[in-house]
Length: 360
Figure 1 (cartoon, rainbow, N blue to C red):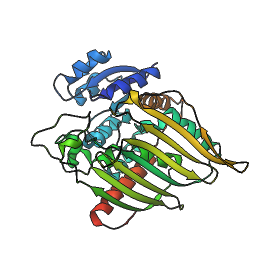
Figure 2: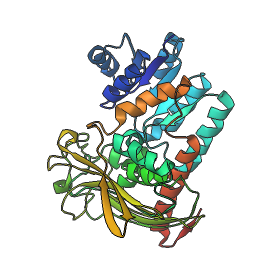
Figure 3: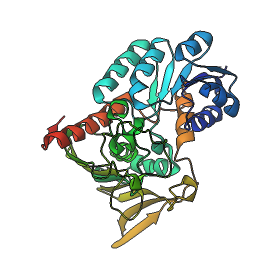
């Protein structure tokens, strides 16, 4: 029997979730969205048989649902995840896991009590480049990764003004929490070590400047709130002695958008990078994956060629969720890793506010 999935949220990410679930052999039976008519429109577009205007109606009307994916603003990740777990469903939620680490811990407690799997869409782990790099790491060719640098920076990338992205109460923060993917990927490569101390700073110089708006996102909301950062920088030390520096921004005085993780191991260094074209679109991006080693007295740079993947692993990440709950694959991420990631993000915001390092 195919796993039956219900989707909460009719936004743009639905296309990737649907493609991934179907690739893994699951059946999408329903979509729910509180916006009037949104679910029906999405159901028709994505060939989903049933649509509902509330989550409660979907859960009661489709009791055959085994799993739920959640594609909604960040504030609602925790309550909807808990609601679905308590209803006996596995959950695949968009990132970030929640607004903060305390919320993630609540979700973990409920998932454990319910005996259900909870995964998050850290889709960059599913990119071919990332998986190829993990093979080298797992094979021992990199050694211990002592240090890493995580970067997702944009010059003009604010995703609209006054909407939920720029409203801290709804989003939890700005680019640091929105573009957390490279911080997650760096910690993934490092073996997700336990963080010890964090020093961070945020900047909001351009967050009200419409000339820094990105070419995508959501429409501006007149009279809405814009109270998040436009850039965040931080430094993390881990209890085992490893270190991570990070730079994340929607708007910063840089040449072009950069998305990368660079690391230095005891046997090899490496880089996974995506360079976007000037239009910021996935289908004009160039992905690279490289290893740096010393061989026979020479510095050797190895370029790892992987299949093209315009969707940045989104489809593969959704497929992995189905395979994981069916026991056909190991999950690409764990709730414990999500907790550590949010602890780091919380600490960067806390350090920026206090002007002092934060211990975790």
